[in-house]
Image (cartoon, rainbow, N blue to C red; front, side):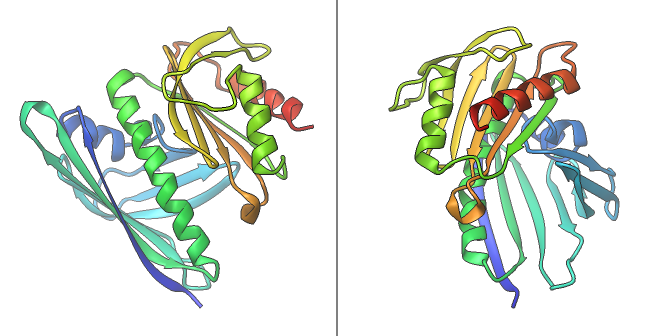
Length: 251
């Protein structure tokens, strides 16, 4: 039986309302910090589409007030479940902005697990939005996604990932990291997000890198959700290199 839910989040951003609008209400903007790829028809009643790992979900824009409010509703499922989003943008002094979001709708039988996952997931993605607007604002992103189902339990999975990245067992914000992926130029960066046992985030001069572990209830899946801002990055080449990295780490 579908279960109604509502989730609220708020974040302060060092960006103007117009810059925040560009990041949350346009396809290229959303693609610079959120998972998958997003298309948005810029008008109330316009259609949108979210695509990840070959699966697409349709949406309808239900609120479109540039610089102030953006809302959309996902197409409903046969079991009555659906999700809807509303973003509220409030400009502050000195060019900063407060962004509030409300996610609501109906979840399925495992709603408690889904609701918990959404809460921690939004914390990570809103932090990623902060990082994008602070360090990469206006730079087009190459979206890199890779997934390894049934990779390993949380502890050994994170141990393998940390070892591959040259990180210590206890990871702290600001720890230095070196990305050495076969087929790609090496990059130096820092840890910019720690959300174990679910998330690890890294930032380099040309990218935001996110490593995700789903947990045992969701099959111990490891997901990579990276955004590369280097000019002339070849999406297929970069994604293939990271897929190979993931396959070697979890054969």
